[in-house]
Length: 221
Ligand SMILES: Cc1cc2nc3c(=O)[nH]c(=O)nc-3n(C[C@H](O)[C@H](O)[C@H](O)COP(=O)(O)O)c2cc1C
Image 1 (cartoon, rainbow, N blue to C red):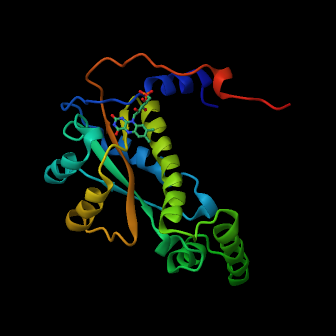
Image 2 (image 1 turned 30 degrees about the vertical axis):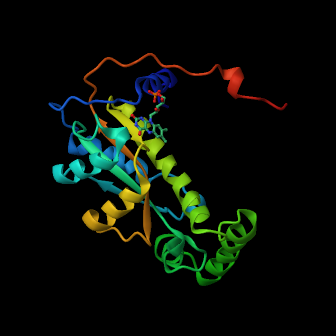
């Protein structure tokens, strides 16, 4: 059992770190550990609608910096910088090749289970959540799941004393173009949802501000 006090300490240690110490690099082993917590994250129906681009190349980081106002201090200083992509409707629709691949090759389900599950997913996407109505609805559904991986990465990093900053401050249209032109990402397949920088803090952490428990939690007994 992991010590609860230590876990809460890690949550308090984690903060949106705006600038990192450029003299300190995260070891390969530690960064693999962080990525593994992304890979092991839960996703709806287990479809893992994500991809993680680790951007270490300076030219690419410079290009990202031009359109990412929320990472002006972190892009040039982060030990590791990750762009998180979510899959779009083409892949996420219940009858896609990708969903077939996930159920057949990753989940290793039998044909009759696949048939039944595809039916569930169809109902979920068509009526329960109305995801078929627009590209945007389906992308947002996939995007929400990438934030689970984002959170897991930041928490696991904090547990081994590594700082991070989640980043959503970017221009979406320009980002799509950059991903296509410079990262070779097919924008009909994937879109950027958020980014996250990792490294070691150089400045003192700001005081944490949060609402009180009773302002955000309501019990119904
Ligand atoms: C989805 C998301 C997007 C964020 N985008 C940015 C960003 O672009 N740049 C930045 O410096 N901080 C960003 N933040 C950090 C928040 O401002 C920060 O988490 C919040 O103010 C709470 O502070 P703390 O994380 O230090 O406790 C983002 C946080 C989240 C969860």
